[in-house]
Amino acid sequence: MGQLEGRGYSTVPRVEQRKRMRGRSLHILIAVISAALLTAGCSNDSKVVSASSEQEGGIETLELRYQGSTGAVTYPELAEDLGYLAPIKLKWIGNTTSGPQDIQTAATGQSDFGGAFNGAIIKLISAGAPIKSVISYYGMDELTFNGYYVLEGSPIKSAKDLIGKKVGMNTLGAHAEFVLKEYLLRGGLTEEEIKQVTLVALPPVNTEQSLRANQIEVAVLGGILRDRALDRGGIRPLFSDYELFGTQSAGTIVFTKQFIKENPNTVRKFVEATAKAIEWARTQPRETVINRYTDIVNKRGRQEDGANLQYWKSSGIAGKGGTIREEEFEIWRKWLESSGDDQAGNVKFEDLFTNEFNPFKDEDKK
Image (cartoon, rainbow, N blue to C red; front, side):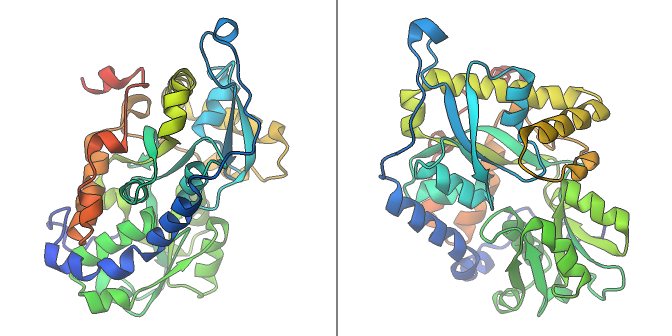
């Protein structure tokens, strides 16, 4: 992995420098938030499948609508396949394009739950969206992380070298952009220099190809897509989110507060099942997990290629069973606050997330 600029700098760079950059770095998130809030009060036209307390042990809703990911298996999907989620069934309504889009879909009632980067969730909640995180679902460790890659012969070796260059990532206003801005700030770039780094939103499956075609100078690659690209050779790492932040869960699954209030037993069952699925994946041999994922993809009939599953390495989730840790929100809340977003900085932890439904919450404290 490439050497980092300013490795000895604090996790939160200089306050004044961040305040100067606030206008540009979060404009995409603000647009997403505005769209979500405009439609948050819309009624849900989907038919909800419910059960009586006597029949299903108090579980209020037996069907949960969600968005998936092409060629990948989410932990709720794994939980259902392992039998942990029964009697609740998942209803796939399509594939998400990004974390912000996924939680917007949940906030507006088009799906029942969604997941995104914690920084994006803070922004959405600070803008008034009535959602709350209930369990972590992705993160970074030494095996699973997002890397920022350049071609083998590229002259780019530091943050300063990114001035005037294009960086391709899955979406703007989320994890990849926040991490990049952190790297640039630690590397000593000014506001004007940061503005000269162009961010390009690309579908993850096309990012590697765009790098090799010289359409971008840096590609953000994570997990399976990263390892497959490395196997093909010809690229090298510049830095990674793991190098910047260490082992940490970075994204969580949300429900609306209304859904949680009206369906507490459903949410509890969902979180318990997902938490157990996370621990199953964490404790099983790698080959066992890959084989299970492959079987799930093959039998769900979505006309997708599951070849990338062979590169799965770890969950990347820090907390046991996806338990959410305060610092996993605090680091991004402070990041937003120091960027001049006082509204996001004033959001309280109790408004952001809850571990009340997670059976591993006490074990994670030990």
